[in-house]
Length: 114
Length: 110
Image 1: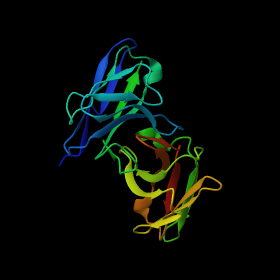
Image 2 (image 1 turned 90 degrees about the horizontal axis):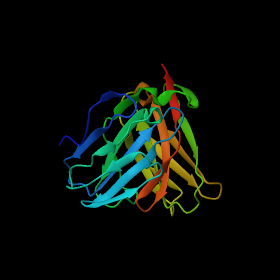
Image 3 (image 1 turned 90 degrees about the vertical axis):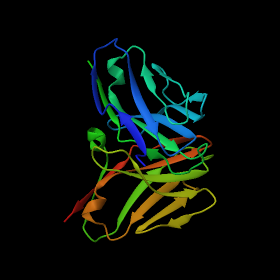
């Protein structure tokens, strides 16, 4: 099992560019989520999904889109990158609609927007 | 990420001593609480969780204490080892969502 795989590990964008952060898990987990982590701040939930075809907003959804067409994949799209989106992004999954079961995190994507 | 340790409160502990990391939460409706460990450049790793109907739970070398009266959570690490050096943060939540604290950086002094 590879667990949760995120690509790319590093990315530099110019303001206004778009890109997709990829997240895939091979554990057949229903729940998947995206967080951003900024210095001095806790992990903040961007979007989450409780199953294929179902997504919902988290704490900081503005500027990001998600879709969940399969159980395995949960890509995060930045439509028009802004410097405020410079951060480290983590994808996480859990076996069921999350009620405290362990979240399995990917290794992160470090994004810089210039 | 690489910068996760910046701007965080730091706890320095001698190797072999016990560590106590504290966390305050704000939502009294939270019904579960979790501790994660994050090493530099890596994603967070689950350590232990506790439900709101408990006040103590023990794992391997770790104990979590929950005081709902003052909305406080603590993680105790016994016989701290150099490999315990990391950022530790708590999470609290209910259905489908969890809110994480900013974390505490644990430095183990050999």
